[in-house]
Image (cartoon, rainbow, N blue to C red; front, side, top):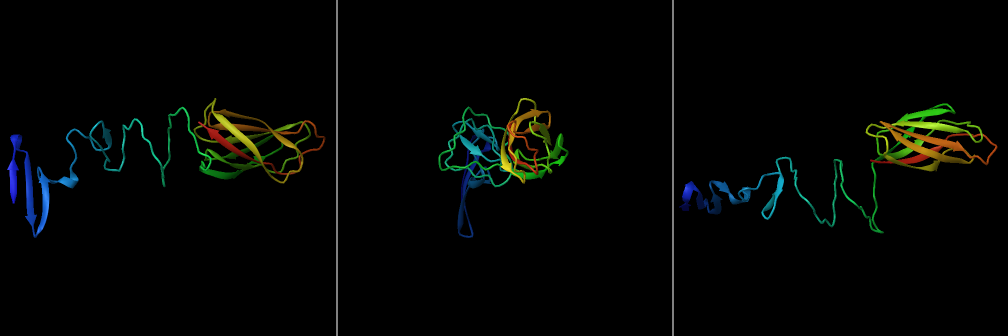
Length: 197
């Protein structure tokens, strides 16, 4: 056994217990210690990145990552000027389906995802008339962007998306029986939506 004692009582040891050598600094295994001034759960400039007790890490200003895989949890805030996805890349959004109910004037549904597919009830909306589909989605605010594309349904008459407006916790999608037709809608209309915060 070798033990060195420095100023302030700091110690360095090399111990051989049962034939297994280990090195200790101040009675702690070297593998369990990190640099002075480094705080667990943070990145310290020019020193180290040390995970916190819950394997969290904070204060990283920038990082270049070849592959990032998140198996659970959510990315809640991303501050970036550009997000680029290569030609072979995909962006998979957590999405769900929902069914709306109501009449030819107003249909309603509650959705819980930032993207999904909504199918209305059977519509008989007259030519050049509209039906509002009001989606309740917690977190939506006025001015948020909402993209909508038609996705099918049983209706065979021409229908267009007139608008998609975000207000507090609500997205109102207005479907219009095409102005050029003279036939009423004759079934359900399905559409995809994507909310961008």
